[in-house]
Length: 102
Image (tube, rainbow, N blue to C red; front, side):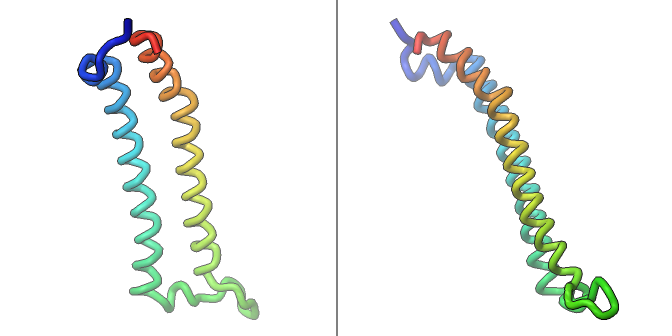
């Protein structure tokens, strides 16, 4: 017979899994917010820097690659979470499921 919800919530492995998930989620969220709001603040407070041309006669400004970088870094952070979830979190979930008979 399986464990009750209270037993599962008090289980050492479950609490460890939840703590690790919270830790990685908080870290990645903070990094994403720093990246995103850093770009927004750059737009708000240093437009001349973002308007700097990359080449003498070109139309591309430095703001374009920085904006693309924000998007790419977001994808990379998402990929880091997916890799962590697939390699660590899913293993912990399976261990707990076996333990509770689920």
